[in-house]
Image (cartoon, rainbow, N blue to C red; front, side):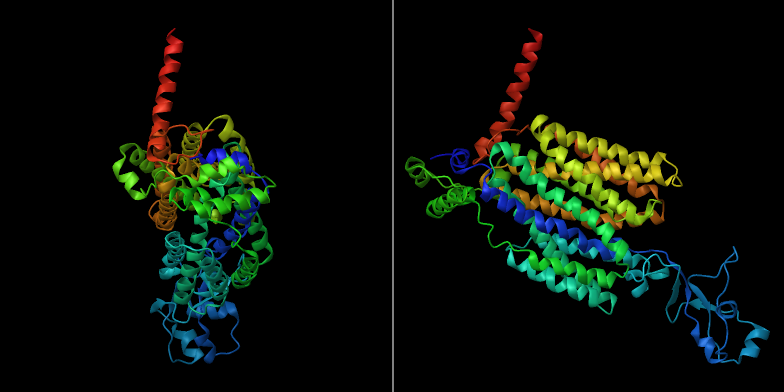
Length: 519
């Protein structure tokens, strides 16, 4: 039977068909960052005081300053309390002025906000302040949990419907619990799109395979930059949520076919042959009769799946290493992303820089993956990215430019590493396990995203704790990537034996290189 690399060389390794698939995968990545708007663009500690309009019943003509002096206690520095008020009493205004109020309580009737960067956020609409401030981190966690759940679902139509419907309902939710539920379901739709990436890569030949992983991520970076500009002009989170739902109408994945490589591996040769003929026609190529005859011959059907991983110690080593790397870089990426407003510079500028800095990262990544290889690229990006984040601990927090620069550098490199992992995980494993490995890798990545908000919340005890944890994790995972083989310019393995041979090939290359030096 012809290997799939030979088939691709005949029907076109990067023709119109592959470019169409790549475009279909790119557009969702462009708009998906918008769905993080409501949990990123928030003022976690806005200027505020308790709503004490109860006193206006006794004296409707009080000025704001007089009202605060009578009903809100002061802090030690002389400012009005943000979270306490005097207990309401049924007195006339003369008695309140003469005797004053002494007993305090938490805000009973909500807050009055002032000096806001935004017109409205989930913090101000749902009063996520004072003893409810931790609920902001929960909102971020729930969205990540939805994305994780989405990784476990299949099918292209369901996520489009979920994202469209619940992006709209999120912007209309009147209460915080309903907001959480809506965000969770919208996150499911977000997560399912991750399953499409291997489909594009499996149709692209060796020479252009890095494009399949990097171009889709590049569009995500552009989306991040656009997000910063969009929120600069739309300061109301509800309106922003409704606006971001509109482009989902344009997402259409029905023309993304199944992987012919996977069909052949399952013994469904007739379906695979029909699909290959269609792809060749789209690429204006003709499949030779001799190649079609080879395609119809299927000597054995490998149904390994997860069993491949269980039986092979080599594949287990690859899997655990790449999973840890993907998990670590996602923890770092989202810890930096969700704290975009805490680095000291203008949040809109920082968000735009976050996105724009990733554009050259993915462009360079395409070239570097072919020039240097997967292994060296992944080790370098993880280790250097982790060290840049670790350097944040050595910089005074008051130096906003230095902190933001290091954060952008760390995010730049970890995002770059994410593109490499997307490609690497597909090149390490055989066809029977490739889709499963990519799915499990995505799940590990989303678990990292899920744990990012709780990890960031540890900053209330000491700001350096989250930074130290995610930086160390990234450096460690980068060092462990020395265990992986190099897969540059190799065909995707179709069997467990071929996948295991990659390590033997690299070991032989290293031994030969050492012997050459000795001679």
